[in-house]
Image 1 (tube, rainbow, N blue to C red):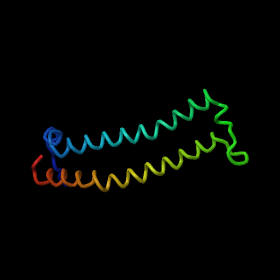
Image 2: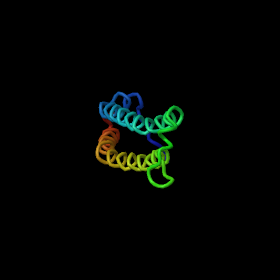
Image 3: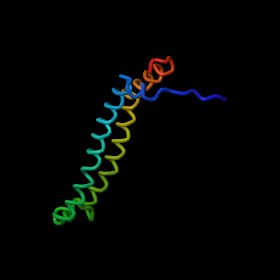
Length: 106
């Protein structure tokens, strides 16, 4: 079976590819910041404001535990939002790019 050869330098210059890469990079960097900030706030808060993290909310549950648990929910929310945006924005752009490559436009 013969594999098809692509002109990768032409693909890199393709307007659809550039648009897709720019949108994905911006989106993923934003999600990275959104996910990393709570992690850093947790470590900084626990190190510099331990009295705040010892504050009891419900029984033995304190602010520190709630903050840690909230990170699980944040991760799930980020995953759901990523899936939604991928299907809405990135998949159509990728399909357009692949269609153009298959037609020999790239």
